Length: 208
Image (cartoon, rainbow, N blue to C red; front, top):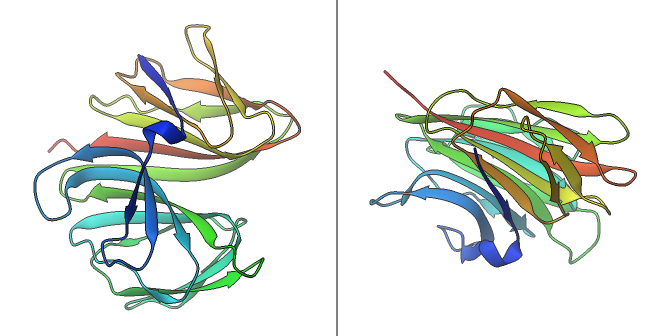
């Protein structure tokens, strides 16, 4: 298994496709074309109301990291309000979406977490956990070409990840763990300190 701990120096900031915000790209599988990726994992800041960029043929999942709540108006659906306590929200990238943030602190934007996969070739899962004293088992995908990605959003001591081979990897807050060439069904997660907030993503290639 290939194990990488990634930090701010490895991440890339860029403007939104529509120019109305800033995205921090945490991991990506690039490809030629308009959108330029097969899959992408990122965070973004939202400070004002406005539309999302359009990504045709892309499946998206969105969750709130910190900073308040975000109400989404999604084409053909009822409005939904996302907070740090709600589950990640999935929607098609080609849908017209606008958002309205409610900031916890004036002038401090909301941070959100995004996963995007090209629907014709890839699929993804996204879950959010607040780790406390208990050990959490993180199930890993068995398919070839799959990637597992952990992002530690908050937590004074970060997260300790126990791999199946006995190795323990420390992931500080603001850092991520990427697993490729996965050869184990699961690993164990534990907060180093009172609690840690983690986002767990698995990206898997479709085989037809």
